[in-house]
Length: 226
Image (tube, rainbow, N blue to C red):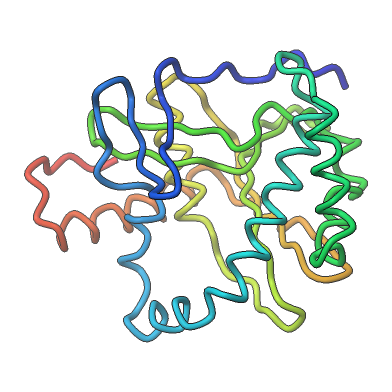
């Protein structure tokens, strides 16, 4: 499909790494979608995440970067890929995480959809929340789908990402960008699968619950929910 619907960046919005802080002009966003969702995890779960960071973080970073490069090189009409980016993709696809990356970037799904975004930062100025979602595409039925990539170990379990998807949907809606459904891309060694679709309402309701809990925990002064 021709990449004619690639989303234009939100003017002035940028992320400062490695601290992952978002700015729109001179406005700094105090929390990200991921930060809000941390209220849904128990102390035990957070401790476990930190204890295994050395395992999942380099794997996740490599898979996300490989997908970003592949989608940009294959679909983005506004920024032609460079030889350096192609070489970086080749290096990732033949490196330590090739068992995850090869099935991900060569999945047949990519030839059946029209990708419209990759690693796209977004924000809501009113509620001072920002975040970056992994990809979005238009499927064979014309549905606009926002998708999140998750990498798993060989025996890793899947879980609901509806709240995270709903967070990005809510932020994008403030910029006039709307999605019909959400989906998780599960990347395992030797296999990539796409989850069943989450409806837009399911995602937004899950996000609303997380947002309300986060606001209650942080005693935010603005009571308006998403």
